Length: 414
Image (cartoon, rainbow, N blue to C red; front, side):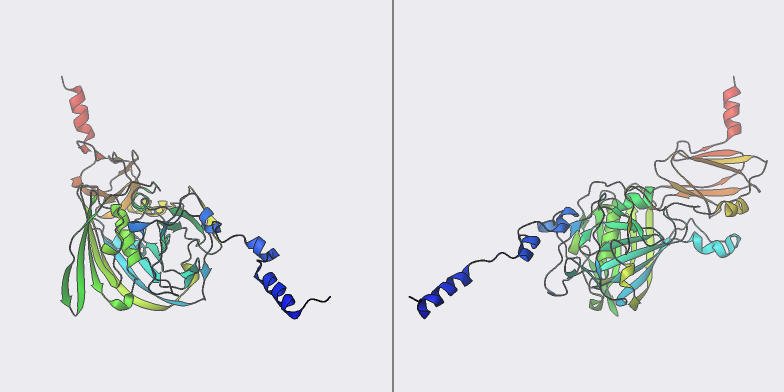
């Protein structure tokens, strides 16, 4: 006997309720499995360690969760949206009073100037289905430990940075806590973080609100002066993060709130010395290429354990011979007795970069050469005296200046 219509309907309903397994579902796997990104980067930080580095384009109220970069792992490619996008730029000019750009340098004078070109994008790059702000800092001049046009890139969903070679493709990761060692010693050494003390902001108004914040760690104090401008949104937050790296602190929104444009900053170090810079040329851009900001770079070449070649720093060998020719007369000798590289200046002109224990000498073409030496961060400042050859200077030693003839007299005296 044929089944009734009611029975057929009941059976069909029960079959429709049973879960079906399709080949596509089996290939995709369960939603409880870890994502591929978990094999490349660590799990998100939790609690107070999260910071709003940017805003999810799909949900403006939802802050991005930031994860730390890992030094020995290549990064997964990002999704670059379009060929042109809006963003911002400004220039950071470092104030090194020891350095002058005299007429002797001619067209090379610009190389005796340390500056950063900072550019940023708000949301033209997508990572893990979220639009993420990005920043790149281009090194300009020959006074850095890295060659000119090296880039330091960062993104709003990660702690840490990457170094991009001047070729625009080669890169390596600089984890959080290693940026100061990179600029100071040309090393990617992760150092432990410090707790910071953030002073109450001082606000003044001269057309636009100007906010002054002081952030202190055991290494020193950062004074950051910024202008309030809501239209800039989170444009200055990644740059503020970069500065905090020099103090080895991470304080997030309390020190780097959205809606501020940096104007100038000064580090005063616990060991003495300082590093100052002014910031100018703020402008909005509509012609930035998102592919120039990708972390990692487009068509990346991952180079763990390497850094961009130093090349001739601060000058090519020919320029060095022109500025400080070596003759047959009495010698001036300099040796770096400190544990960090030092830039030696003669009469205010950069002469040579001395690595720890490295020695350099030349025959002065005239009497009375004034010498100075400094590290990049300004924690070690030496010299300023007038030298007459022959003389030996051990930077950082006690005593620092030794005259060979005096040593000879002491050694032969009864």
